[in-house]
Image (cartoon, helix red, strand yellow):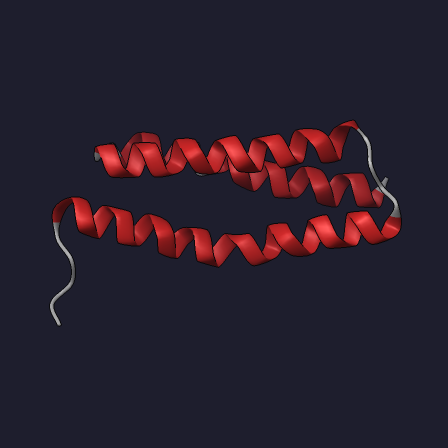
Length: 88
């Protein structure tokens, strides 16, 4: 089957990216919960991840590759905030 083109291809790539990053986020949330680590960093991390993923999919579907690449850093920062919260 040939690769998807246009809007369908962009949506497919965005969902693939989500499936690649979500396990890291879910693991960080689970470890933070089991460790009883609930603070400002974990709350910010969850918000960064959620809203960053919304922005990423929006930029991807709209066809803005540069914006999409820049916005990718927001959910990644959310995961890193969970890691930092666990280390502190």
